[in-house]
Amino acid sequence: MIDVLVPVLARARNVAPFVESFRVATPKGSQIHFLCSPGDEEEIAACQESGEHTLIMEWTPERSDYPRKMNFGFSVTEQPWILLGSDDIEFTPGWLNRALRTAKDTKASVIATNDMANRQVMSGQFGTHSLVRRAYVEEQGASMDGPGVLIHEGYDHNFCDRELCHVAEYRGLYAFSEGSHVRHRHPHWKSARMDSTYKKGLRTFREDQALFLSRGHLWNYCGMSEPEKARGERSKSQS
Image 1 (tube, rainbow, N blue to C red):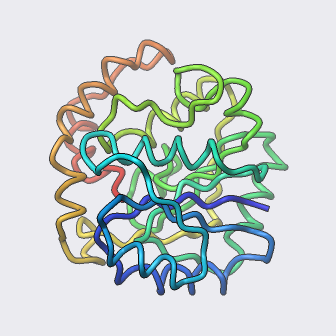
Image 2 (cartoon, helix red, strand yellow):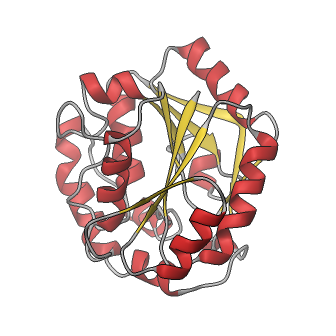
């Protein structure tokens, strides 16, 4: 039914709760794909022990690790829908059926789920964990980089999700599924503790924001106001 792409790094403790949450709340026929880094032995072991598909990348987790992992995961999977996942989310019963219902009703190709944390996400402006139609990526690309590209690899980590959603909105192919609850547990919302992986994701926030704003003309984006930029501090895409 769907492929769930989950880039992971140094958080083996999250694997079992993530898998249990997904399997309890999601209809059969969907596949988790853990995207691991070489040398991250504890993480790799936890992913493999979960029984889920585990892939080890050929590069070290330096700059742009998150978008590279997502693009690689897209290239080696084949289900008609892809979820941009992370190991710090919790699935709730009915989340997938509600998201697919939104897709059917709206004909959209990027469906933002409700992360139950970020105010901008909950108001439908964008999604941190979106469901994306594979055919859309194959035919147009989900970033502005052309067919076959899910995420622009110029980003280190942040704003990938915003570009994906804004591009789809520009094309008339974005929808928010308010009832599709995929809870995001994160230090910004005081629902997860800060660790080295979160810190890695935060380190280039300003650079990623500047890149996002510089690319905005590609989808007719006029830019963020100063209040929006401030709110953006709490609207980062985190793995």
